[in-house]
Amino acid sequence: MYYAFARLGFQTQNLKEKSTMPTHWYETFFRGVAVDFWRRIMTPEITAAEVDFIEKALHGSPGSRLLDVPCGDGRHSIELARRNHQVTGVDISDDFLSAARESALAARLAVEWLRADMRDMRWVSEFDGAFCFGNSFGYLDPAAAEEFLVRLAAALKPDGRVVIDTGTAAESILPTLLPKRWHKVGEIFMLSEARYQPEDSRLDIDYTFVQGGEVETRPASSYVFTVSEIRRLLKRAGFGTTSIFGGVRGEPFQLGTPRLIVVAKKGLAE
Picture 1: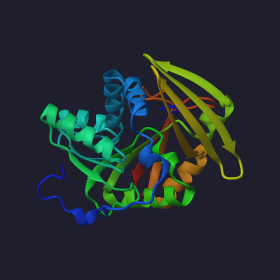
Picture 2: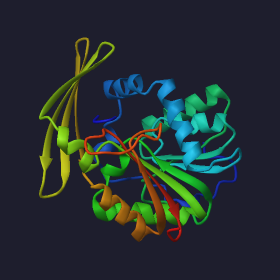
Picture 3: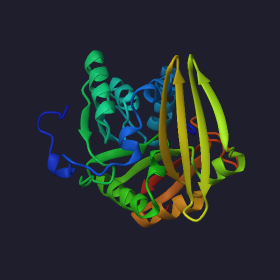
Picture 4: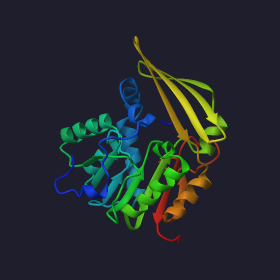
């Protein structure tokens, strides 16, 4: 990882839930040791700092209706619900959604969870803000990314805002890309073996996770967009003003900055 309950009365026609979905790497990647590794990296302190940024960027006041897509194990959704926001979390992974439901139930927090592809939203002017954290934007090829942003813009109320977070922007990852890297979190070791495909602007990575005597391998692939490409996609989807950052403390984004965060407002540029 290079950076690594349907509520009563919800209108399910706003989002196409799929009983059978085409298999993509991200549908089965997050399970077993891979999930353990990911959760150890994303500490409660990191989640709290990210949610602080999300609230500020989205101008979220208590009671705001927010969309977390894809939501993963729900760590952001649950923290936002704890801060009195109305949150809907969408993800394609049954394992992640099961964990999210359990965590929300344990915390006695109401969050709306739905299993669906992030491109299959059908809401119209329902949300005050939305966010896409954790590299998920790069899972989509350019056409699918534009489709996702169009759906996202439609789901937002006028002047709604979106936050997109990625560690696979071209300016972030290509200057420091290594063919092999070892990472260690606790007793889990991870080897990442990366191959950049310039003809497709795609980064293919094979991950090997080692925990005790257990070894698991996972393939992954992300499309690598430049900052200007992301901004053009946002503009075509109906977003105007955009701001870019290099982290949740508002750091400037520069060549080689490991993380890109884009904040965009629906509507014409100011």
